[in-house]
Length: 119
Image 1 (cartoon, one colour):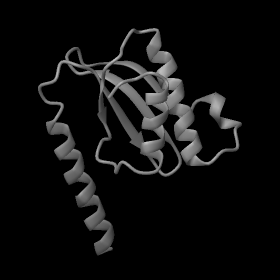
Image 2: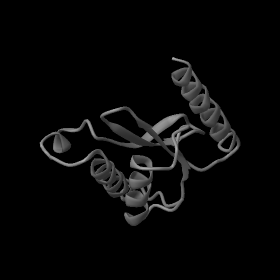
Image 3: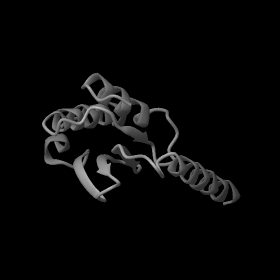
Image 4: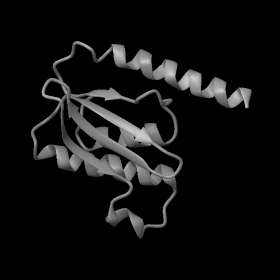
């Protein structure tokens, strides 16, 4: 029980620390969220407080595929980068939302970079 509480505190500390970097930026950010089964990514314009583009592993096109969670995160990252091309957004900030840059988070980021996003 103590270890679980410690992990939650570490996550919240990382999340708070990563939010400081975006406080005064005019550019958009790529914010991710991952649960035990799914991963979601969205590009947010903090100035107007609107979500520009989003992609998620909960979408219908991914429900039939039999792939690992890491491969699924890469598919979501590639899908997000395709949707962004129509919006003419090139440079963004990567907000990992307190999650470690490892595994699914890294896979999503690498796929988004391969798709043409710069962060």
